[in-house]
Length: 292
Image 1: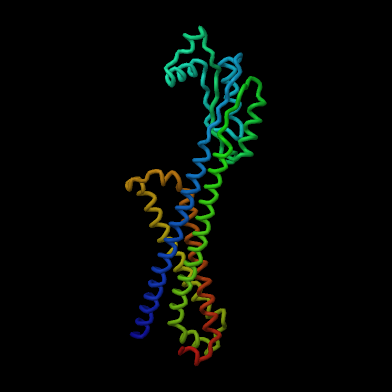
Image 2: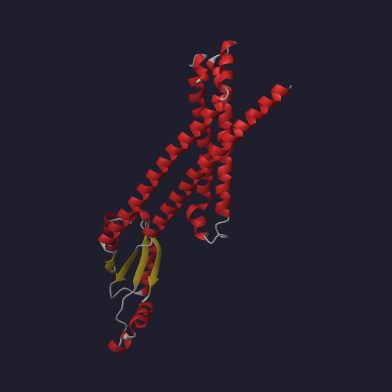
């Protein structure tokens, strides 16, 4: 009974060591994923802050301008459409310049306006040109003001570089994590290489020998992913307490659920693959090679 107890403790210790190493690797991957999602969300928010101003013709009434505003808001490219009536335009001019145009001209010379932000899909040079043409074709629209194309192109270029940088970083971290997890699992199975050889001697098939190692390490990967996801979820829940409430908005719980599930699935897959490679290596070794 005593030898069985010692073997049991040894296996538990090996799985614990593997689990800790895998959890740390998955934590790093999960953190990179959270940063990538937050950066992507913030980039989208920046793109959706691009504002377009639509000036109506002089003979367009506030009621007609309101109808145009509602029509624009229903399009695929517009968000947060807002009507600025003649009186509101006059008040804004007076507040900005201190000049009372109605007193100077005897009437209000300003026209109603509609301002709206553009959805991220149209926040490109071609997209903005399509928006301008579409809105300009509406009866009663005199002028459509869009941001400078160079500003839009510069912003999109910077966002593409940021996305590419995070993608490369995530790929590098994935490779490093796989190497670390693979080495950890290999060391764990290396300590049981004599057990594998003994099972071969009594006639056990390769599949029968591999199965428990693969299943056990896959379970370690699932548990490690669950722990890593739990730590990251707790961090997200406490972001407001740490003075970072916007992080919860940028990432969101649906995306956090995707990250947690991916960590569990990825941990299981990587650990199972590492166990498969390690056991296959030892199954092909001769008895003399076990001492190397």
